[in-house]
Length: 399
Image (tube, one colour):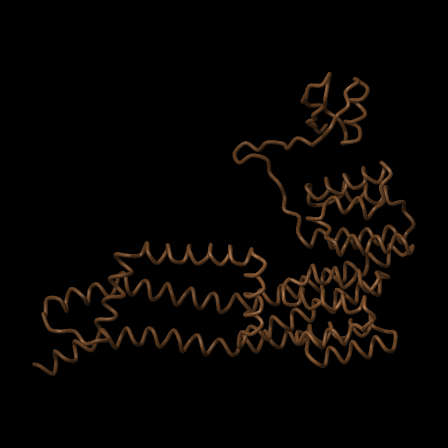
């Protein structure tokens, strides 16, 4: 049986201890029988022999499987408590199973499902909880859960596409750096010894390579320190509101990656807003959620300005057009959808279109970067090789 740690006030003093019980609710009841009124109860983590308590990470796949199974059970007419009890006990991820059972306990205490889920926003985010609340109010929880599962899967697929676009150039740049570092640390010093013995003045390119090699060998800590300083400076700057806005604005203006980032932002915004509106969430509330989950502060600012304009009586398309964030075609389609009363369907079509656009952009990015990176790497290696052979050619001419 699980062990729970608790804190309670007894005669004005804080008392702590442990109690064994089936769940948190049972632990609370057991303590009350002993005239102990706990102020907090937490499940005690089971220690591992080597590395402390083992915690399984809750993945997007876990949430999708839970959502689909939950939808099927609700559609079959099973009570929420029974659904959650089955899902919690049968979950492949023990950590996730515990959280589901905690949600069940909260419902048994009289809370509704959406409020119970909001206590675990690291698992079920604001979008998820708002849609569940709309499903509870409208009596279509099973339908909402199916839409949520579809939305999460498509959002995760979009995220994977972006990651795949970044992996290839990152790998090439890393390999290029390692090759250059190997040459500078292990190969160039052999030539340096030979040229030093010759005593002749070295050509400019050769001297540059020699200086870089010396830097790699003797001042490598400066380079590593520079990388670390840049990383923490970037992180600290991005943590500030102003810094994040400037970096996100610059990201949208990048020659190749900027187009991809803009298309991803459009796909995410339209998919999220379409799912929210079709599920019965009010437009203002849906836009607020889209802004907070945009992932780009420029898009976030544009959506918040749109919300203020709508409150003053404007349509959604006009203020979005003024912000110059979304392409004209997207604005026109939103305008048509709003005029015809089918905004949710139009947003879904835009999202599907831009999902395909992201696919094409990723393929185009890979096709464009491959020759560029190869030329870049070839130029660096070629320069090093030529620079090393220039003194040898000079010596040959002298002889």
